Length: 309
Image (spheres, rainbow, N blue to C red):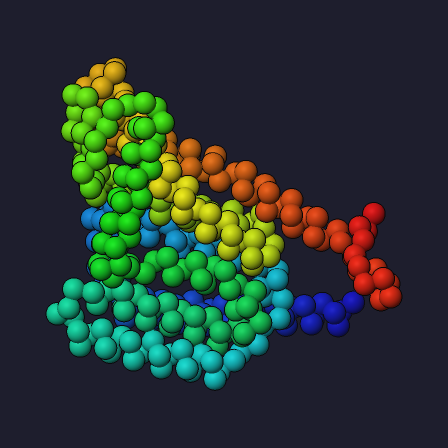
């Protein structure tokens, strides 16, 4: 018993030393990246589609903590992959520093920082721990502010998709409507699907929620992928429904709805609606996974499958 106690104590001390080493490297990388981190915080507070950034690191830390028994079950330093990541991160940092005059250098600096964090984790805990914590580390990449041209393209796509859905919803509801691109002409109201109507912020939060639901509820890569892909039509559907709802309330109830709370800050309502729409898909995928897990191969000569029960 004493021997086992000494082994456990030694393991705990080793893990403590590794954790202190990781904390030192993590803090050092953050101190060396104070300017990019300040710029990232400024970006998150000044861009609607960046407000989620403050949640990413705490959520990732919580995910690792919840899975700590598996993540830290086998720790071992791996120098070579860490060195590669350190060099890659350092190269990106140097390139970003030399292109500070550009408008899209921040994402390079944050990518560099994430690579340094990953390298520090691997050198302290090893590849096995990193594989067990792969999802939290991939989740961290949601911190990276997308280049402006990608954001503009995403917003334009959401605007066009939302306008198309809204047009057909108007038609289904027998509301007279004439569409010119992103502009709708309906009785007593001309409405444009502006950038603010793209729903980029609520869509981003819905994406984060979907990723977490897939990780906690589903088991297979393909089920998680299908869940995330199914989010695209749900996003444009909820945006289109929001446009039609506000328009109908403005026309038939009160003109104040056009500039009221539901228009300005009602994204949470339609976010919850999108989440409810996603629930049946999640249930179907979970059911399919459970049925697949219950299937067992028959004897070799039958060439078929059977239920385990």
